[in-house]
Length: 246
Image 1 (tube, rainbow, N blue to C red):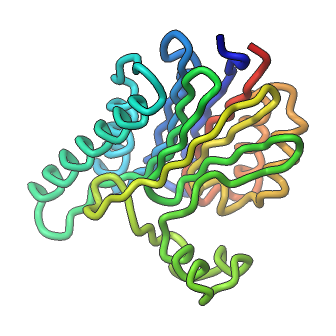
Image 2: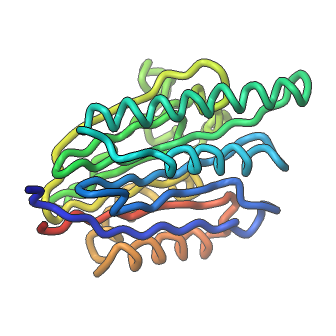
């Protein structure tokens, strides 16, 4: 029997500058007996493209059937995302040369006490445990490649002119998923988010908000409010997931 249960809350906001919201999220703390599924997708490609792409990603994940175990769950998620990847690339080719219909994605899967994260792009998943914030995902981005190669300091990444250039995404061609697994503990708090949050709110402030909020919905609302107060130049989407004693 699982020792944890999950409560969660997702929010998305168009922001104060963009004309439309190209983000989407999935919030399913009880996707089936003993398992949950959460996701954030950040669409790319502009009108009738980015919002379509993120919606297709979330719809495909929402259609998943109950898995046999966590390993099957991870395989099922990757299979669904690869199918969406191919469909988006076909649709883009039909629009003509240079057309892009793509989306980043970050997912959190829970099966009993076990969890897995799967991602492509620069949408992120964090874990707050015992007051310490860990970034479970690694950005698939140009600046992260520079940081990893020692050519750019991590603290300078947010100001680099190519900070929004992602190297992998659903629908963008070359696709290799990032994956991480672990065991959830009572008291853990997870955050999935688009870069509309992380471009404007630092890790320390994220950690403080997740730790202080009484419930996932409170944390989600407070983080979105901070982004709006700072100008919200991009869409912002997030899901906060709390692991409680089962």
